[in-house]
Image 1: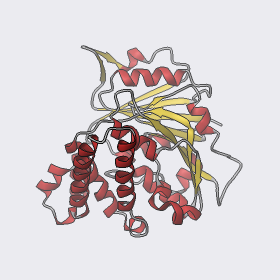
Image 2: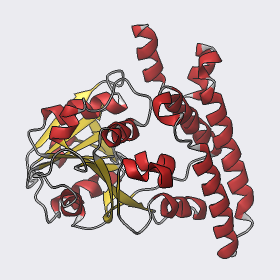
Image 3: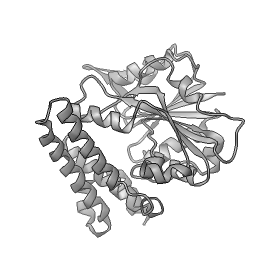
Length: 322
């Protein structure tokens, strides 16, 4: 089995350097690394800058670097472009700030796939567990635990009744895809504002394939988002959901959001930090406001959409095509 790794980057920093170091330590030898770097030909470390080519010498596997403009980048399109260049059996996507927690990440994800199996029940995608960074807030730390539990699970159509929207959950922060199935299903859609991973997972599951959550495959990845960032992210999230009624009219994501809020509040009381509930309420309000505006984006002016979104280039591309 051959595994290629694809990492889209934008102004990467020391965390990306650590990611590269961890990839070199993997017990499963990577076949090829593809880096799709947006706009900046240099990456920064402290007060200095380094060309990619200066930092990638001596890697134990071939590295291909493609520099693209900001206008060219698309969450689905850029990743699909990299995947279709690959000659491997499995393609693993990582974000530049997702650091393998140990040397077994690639091995654990590769083990989720049985290339001899085809048709009903075959695993089309597998995604890793995300562990919080040391500087992670208590609320975000619990969110990681809520979304990425310690037990693995293979998800199929039979789980929709029990899991609801979580059946289709998958994260390209660290997710691997079986390339023959990826090509069969047309890969990621493009252009896409958000959720290219989830839309592919839903398509695969509805076609009879499975998605595997591999809890033993672990990356360190978390963010301490501001309320404004929560608003913008949830605006884009709701837009993506509105564009896919075939998924979200069948399973609601709002009930899962409320479950997270209630579980987090209970956790904060259990760890004797009830004062953080104020922050939880404010963050939840920002998320809900962004989500509500995103649900009605078709009624908003272009000026307001650009004010609310994190993905201006997506909108410029869509409006240009219209």
